[in-house]
Image 1 (tube, helix red, strand yellow):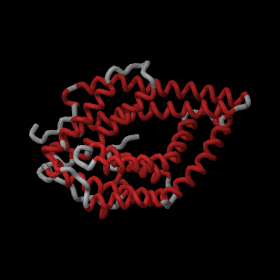
Image 2 (cartoon, one colour):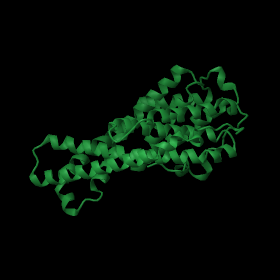
Image 3 (cartoon, helix red, strand yellow):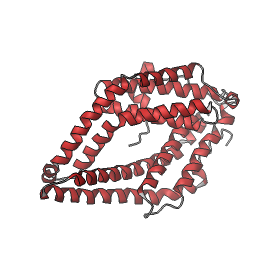
Image 4 (cartoon, helix red, strand yellow):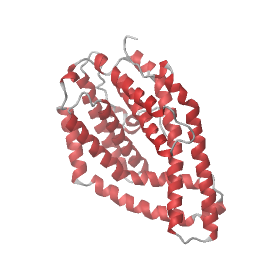
Length: 316
């Protein structure tokens, strides 16, 4: 679920908090370098937790990779296209390589939530299947973090902090260059959310969730470079983005969980007790997905209001 607290401030001790925040009159290049530096700190802190076997460390490592991908996407007009695209691809690889552990833990929690002791016993084969997959996923995490590809990614990020490959536009002040990037992220979210209803396929809602997350990350990133007043004003739209992200995250979790139950059922044969428990679980998961989707559809019109268009011009 989304949090209003910066993940790095939950991981790093007070003495290691990032302090190099750019200001409105600083060149946009300083915001890009700050983004990369903070991302490295997040990834390194989460990596240490992940190597220690903490599931939350794995989650934060994947979240840090996704966040930086979103930030690079937001800055795409200011960085060398080849460099930015390559880094986004490597960050996507990292998130995919380490993400299954967290996904499987979420599935186990989702399957157990609200079930009776009797149903949990009946669903034991499903939980055993997930446990076996999780053990393999844990091995893959170790291989990933010890591998040359991960080290090369971190080396390239460090090199980017020292000398980011930027275009000329990045030399202009943050107050001129960055606000349109936020407005563009919110415009894309509105466009993708337009016209959705209860009959829209589930994957479309997942894409809207990703757009909401990108709009939130972009807003958080850029508002901090535009001064305290703008940062305070940005809280309203970030709350909306978080709400959308949370609702559609719950929707996606239930949809994915349903798919996993279907996949395990298809492996058969299963005894009657398990099949009855699994069918009941599927019904509850689908109801949860529908409820989250409908809650999102109720608040979707808020995206069309002028105050929620992501305009962060310091002069406003």
